[in-house]
Image (cartoon, rainbow, N blue to C red; front, side):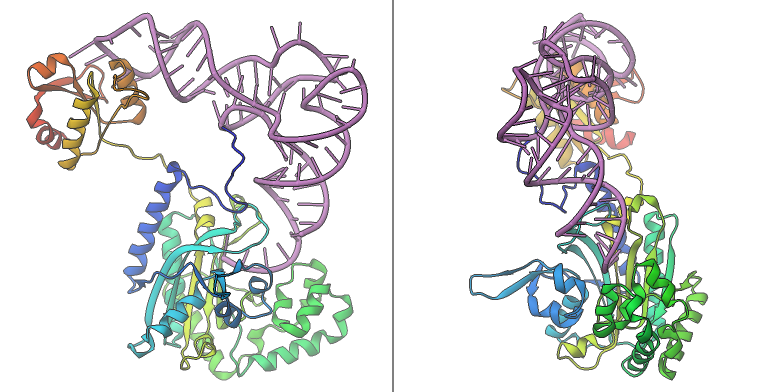
Amino acid sequence: MNISIKPPRGTRDVLPAESEQWQKLEELARKTLKSAGYKEIRLPIFEQTELFCRTAGEGSDVVNKEMYTFADKADRSLTLRPEGTAQAARAYLNSSMDRLRPPTKLFYMGQYFRNEAVQTGRYRQFNQLGLEAFGSASPLLDAETIAIACDFLKKAGVAEFEVQINSLGCSTCRPAYREALKEKLRDRLSTLCKDCCDRYERNPLRMLDCKVEADQEQFIDVPGPLDYLCADCESQWEALTLALGQLRVPFAVNRRLVRGLDYYTRTVFEIVSQDSRLGAQSTIAAGGRYDNLIESLGGPPTPAVGWAVGLERLLLLLETPPTTNVDVFVVSTDVDVALQVATSLRQAGISADLDFPVTGTKSRSFTKQLQEANKLGCRWAVIIGENELAKNEVALKDMRIKGLQISVPIADLPKKLRELT
RNA sequence: GUGACUGUAGUUCAAUGGUUAGAACCCUGGGUUGUGGUCCCAGUAAUGGGGGUUCGAGUCCCCUCAGUCACUCCA
């Protein structure tokens, strides 16, 4: 059927063949993060618009042009969440988790919304797995979160990826770097693209992230934030790289790496893959330290670090495994008998299904029902015809071997199936 | 948001501007209402939508919608 109503642009239906893979991934995520002491937090799908404006930065693209913002009936401005860190931080403060012994380790999974161009690996509704650790400035915590991300990706089955890291400095050293950068580029401004000219005033660091090749050539001899780290940031950085080495997490230093959200300080990182299945995308996970965010929301000074993985992108890198089906298919001349037997099997903890007629109550032929069982890949067929019914028996048929079946008293069926499997 | 390309059964693909838009797979039924995988036969089902040009449009033009790719940016 070709109906006129389709899923909105940038959204998609997850069909059964894929949903099973999602379930496995979610299971793996919970297991992996809980094993590192993280606990799940579930947060609202929409928030007060102000939350994202205050944290991500008025100048960021996310806030500028990508938010789904609407007014409710009381004319409050609300926004479908474009990212998770800000709301995790809000919840942390709202629930006074700053009174707990740090670090407070939280993770979350769910849908996020950004109104931007749609293409492979980029959707308007997408899923992220994220974690946040609040209350510790230890670079070892940064290293731990990166190691956890790598562990998760590996266990999920991602073959090839690279961890890129950088440090953006803190409120002490970043202003000095910002000025040095502006100084260095002042004379070249006329040769740079329009976006970079805007960024020059608003957020000079973002210039390094420019995709215009001619611009990048102008940046070759420009210092990176790493060159201007203060003593504290420098020792943080050294401790981080040392710890990653000790944890055997391979990484590459990317001196040009900056992030799109304004709240990052010190450590930033991205996990990238060149796999063509990602389309034009390469980042599958990204995060960093945001030591000023909690304070900017009105909380106490609280260092924190976190990351997010794009789950759609991750799934693009994985093969779709065959779906699993029920173990037993109940074949009968009477649908109501088949339903009763299937129900009792299910109550006994054995998965079972049967063939329902499209109309009426008349069952299809044995041939059709067995074809169905075969198509579903069921291990067993339980056949109940008039002969079996008269003797209170069923024929238990092993679908893996043609012609192999035994008679079993109907009451013993669950027990027998458990013995055989 | 901007640009390029592409839209034909559920799916993958055919069809010089010219008969009734074909095939394979899927699905349904039958061969074979008491035994599945193979095989044989039959059936259901499509030009994304709307205008225009033409004797005639799946094919050419315009608009629109959708997808893909690229840019911007990001998970």
